[in-house]
Image (cartoon, rainbow, N blue to C red):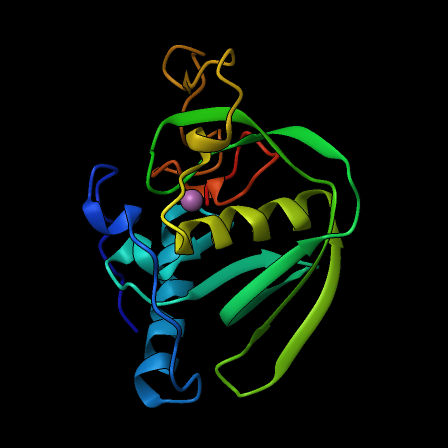
Length: 183
Ligand code: NI
């Protein structure tokens, strides 16, 4: 396992469409899955997407339901017409938080590196994390989803230590909904 470097927020790769994973069970995908997991934990995040570490593949890793999930080629559809605003951060935007509207209920799917197809329904924070991570595969960062009249907050301006907020690297944003989370 290895800790991977997170790209800076102005890296062009963060704005590109990620390519499908051709073989989710390939050894290099297993290795990437382990490295993503380790990097997410070290950064204090709740989710991470492969483009954030410079790999332009459709692969995400996130914590939910008391465990962690790695998915290749994930997708989702909203199950309700309701959007709900929630606080998000992102490992790619350390020190920032913003209120982002997300679907309150979704169905999502993907293939694990073990070759298992996952199909789940999710609500609340779980649904938020998945939407945030899948956005990374589309070259979308959460400020793109924020209403124009809502501010992107700096944790320092909030006098909120990053560590207390859930991660040294703006991490848990890959945790939406929780000021302490980065994805
Ligand atoms: Ni993120």
